[in-house]
Image (cartoon, rainbow, N blue to C red; front, side, top):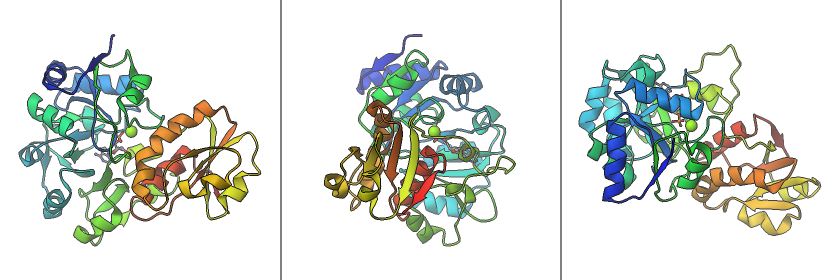
Length: 334
Ligand code: AMP
Ligand code: MG
């Protein structure tokens, strides 16, 4: 199949909307990462997403909507807390897991009785949802296991020839995937940290707890609250270690044949090959560059990469969650 490159203008949006209405799949920009979108009501279209990505069949998709009315079409028994969160964080990078209605096919929820829902802020994504008149199921538009895409070219690198089209939009502003919480159980649980921070969530959900899978490796026998958490994710092909603590420059300077991923502030003290991923004073910049940097690592020809971990507060928790998976849970504490 030839993957069409569509401009973000009226003609491009119209074409993307037609493809989606006809059961096709399209790479689209959102504020978090690029998504691979399909009509959430069309099981055949959903199957194409799983195939193009090589996504495990038991890993459910997030449904993207542009109005609260659609929330009532796809979710039921919606708790008051969900409406409070919607009011405070939508449109934006928060996904809520709620009980699903029969309108959502089991292909979307991977057989679960719940559905994950988000209202994106990105203008292109919103316009496409409104133009097509459809809720769009969309996981990240990468090959399963590889770093998530934050530019249209990342989508093309992974999926050219496997999907109908890509909307050639701007780079993603947040840079990491949405925060996922479940409100389908007795208490709210953070399943995946993201653009909306735990500190922000606590203002609306003071009793929210963090799923074990956020910072720990799940044992094979363990049942994942969020299936995505059990899979290998975000990994460069180069062997990757996450390094916590100070004296990072001193540590990596002894590592020949390696590349360091470091903060701007330590760049001048590092003598081996390095990639700067942002300033530790602006963790938003680390999030924005994270996946671009993970994609770049493999082009450096090193045997090993050492990445300096951020602190685990604010958006740092989301960055740490991605990095610990990129490193297959290999952490060095200095
Ligand atoms: P992705 O869109 O590729 O970033 O992945 C979506 C994430 O949301 C994965 O980690 C899924 O496991 C999670 N997710 C989607 N639907 C549900 C659901 N119904 N229950 C729990 N987690 C979900
Ligand atoms: Mg993904």
